[in-house]
Image (cartoon, rainbow, N blue to C red; front, side, top):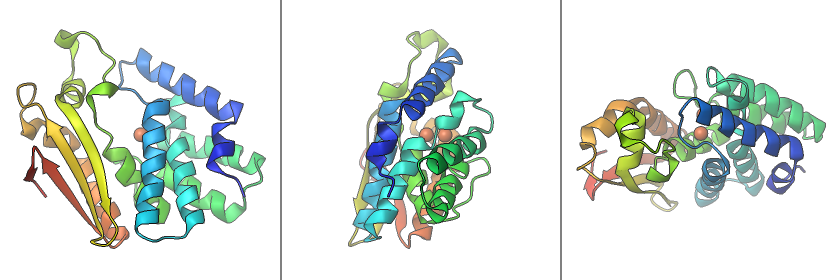
Length: 219
Ligand SMILES: [Fe+2]
Ligand SMILES: [Fe+2]
């Protein structure tokens, strides 16, 4: 059984993840490094465990969460597809069973809100964990005058938590947005497509997705 720990200890994985983050920094993108994938990996696992899915499926979700953005080493464009191809090579080298490889590469290849579809359980978990990681600490641009809308919205999110309630089958994105920086509508302007994908992902897990902004329920 390939474990998340083996993936985390793999020099090829670590090198591509680090370089993906370097390439994105060159383009002025927000942080996509070990902090981001660590959160996505942990949350994806937590979601499935809270909803009483088998432990191995939760481990696969954690692996897919760790690998989901590795394709950024090739290009931001279609990074979910290139990431799935890279993950395929790594996981087959590690002798992961084909069925498990199929689930993981399906999740990596479908995590992007542009063309991704919720094709299996671990995809749903990775999507919920990934789309909800919006936070001030991800902004790398240090010059506020040069902030684009993504920087502004991420910067305005001073606190974000994804709360998973297994008994109520609820996934709640709880955000604190500094409205002196952006009005709440700007958050939805850029993240509407992501939030819609989260709704579909939660429905796939027979649960509901809810958004709280500054203690008010938006969804
Ligand atoms: Fe991504
Ligand atoms: Fe991501």
